View 1 (cartoon, each protein chain N blue to C red):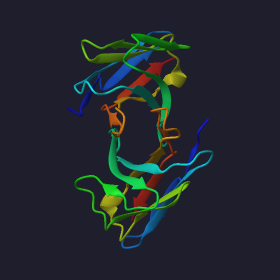
View 2 (spheres, each protein chain N blue to C red; view 1 turned 30 degrees about the vertical axis):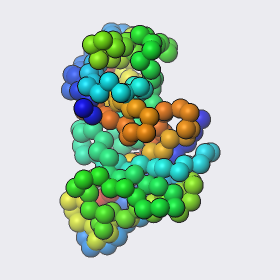
View 3 (cartoon, rainbow over the protein chains, first blue to last red; view 1 turned 135 degrees about the vertical axis):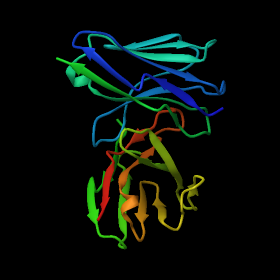
Length: 111
Length: 116
């Protein structure tokens, strides 16, 4: 019930391409879905987040698509840049609970 | 924005010694802070929830006598790794929730512990 499944485990994209990372959850009580970006040797940083009453949220080159009925959400990185190379974690939470993280996706954007 | 400061960023200690890691909320008060451990190329694993003025809540399998947590003020939580062994070498990260309204969590920059 608390799991969040993330795929792919690793992703290689050419500069300018679109990076897509997918997550699926089981617990329908989750009401907040953040994405975190982590660079080597650093803590995760909040990238973008969405609530289930919205199907899409866009901030700059980053977009979350949310499908409540399928219990899935995804991160799209448009015009991917080498500086986007990092590990991305999806997560989910509901009020009073702790963050549940996906397994992480290591993104490499080749120049 | 909300900032969580974590120190030290790196520490090397000898087996059998203890190491203290500090986590401070710089511009907000945090009644609850969280401590994570992260292995290479793995996700964050919650170790314990630190509560200001009360005992920490440890996750199953985490030795509370080895990983001592103190949350003495609304802006400071510490994790002490006692009698450290090489298998305790890892990346430790703290986090806090800046607002009861927002569900967002802010993370510290992490501490790389190496036990030799």
